[in-house]
Image (cartoon, rainbow, N blue to C red):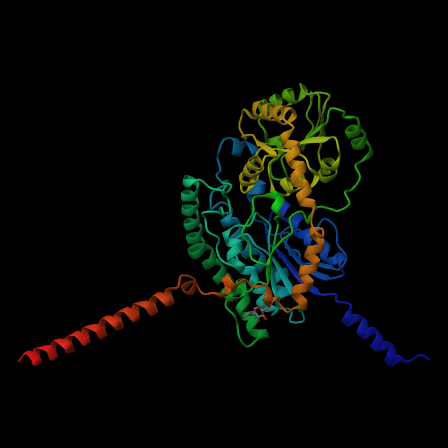
Length: 518
Ligand SMILES: *[C@@H]1O[C@H](CO)[C@@H](O)[C@H](O)[C@H]1NC(C)=O
């Protein structure tokens, strides 16, 4: 019999038990590779049935189901990605691998994002509620304010190799003697000189964090979050309280991709999560080209930041000439057509990178060394030749060299000679390919693929109301207790008391003796 009440109840219970959570993802880095990563998180979570509100610096190309995008793409904010070109790097006009590199751009963008009318409108809307906030972390913590606004748990997402700033959020700053800085290209174990340099770098970064970054964060928090939080709740936590109350860190890292790190239980390695489990098939002509390349394919892409077209023309000519002498087929991701190119060199304006790397004939990957590219090289088991230009590319390439699956070539006017030597070396020495296959095996040998981990941990944090059981004991212990300063104080007091007591007693004895003598 039709029973409307029962029907309604059934609907209600299905809805409330369907475990679709409302999640806010804030991805404030204005760079294509960062957008690929945060979109990777979004995709895994909508596939698991969750509902996402997404505030990205760069919006997705096409609408995604169950995703509400707060569009801030009209922010006009120059990012080094856009205005730097490869020639400037060759001429050493910029030094973006130093500690201050990028900080002004990121801080400015954070501010513009919060000031954007769409974000302001969204934040002022009191009907918005979330079960969880995920925020991308580079070095500023301002967007932790969202977890205060919605009074819900926070997950940090670290797109780079983990460093002391990341560990400080959930554990404690790692010791520079074995853990290198954000932009350092040293690879542990460190020698004496490297350790001293890392210490200096650590102190400098700490100072920058204390006097520059956190000041900017605090001002923005007071201005953009505090009034809104006050409208919703009676007590307003400090930004520091919120930033250091993250449930866990999703780290774009895996043991096979790098040297080991010392990590607490809530540092969750999801490196490789942005790579599709099912690689899209190649277009027919590309498939045929690669199938027919019996001597192998060398794939070259210098990423989305460095435009190959900005190479000086004599450098382009030298590279083409060098490629022309090879037996291998060369596929070059290049934004313009190159006239007079040798018959074995093929230009693609847009390259399906993962599909190309997954082809068995792809034997060398020439890359700028972005973390996405080095991750993909291990995922698909292709040795790399790295030509780093800026930011963490030096670090990623240096690591590939130390781990034995890659070579480094300097971005200079002699790049063609450097590439030639490196290509011959990788072709002649099977150790590079053997090493990358070994790492690839470690990389793939996980209980579940990283995308599944993302979904599992997100749901775990929500179900367990912030997963306080994952907190590191080091994180919960104040610094003076770690240094036993309180104990030292007790000892000091004890010594002073004893000294006083003894002195007193001796004085008394002396007096007695004196009296007895009299
Ligand atoms: C810190 O996080 C826990 C778990 O998410 C939450 O219960 C608590 O209210 C948070 N503290 C503050 C001050 O927001």
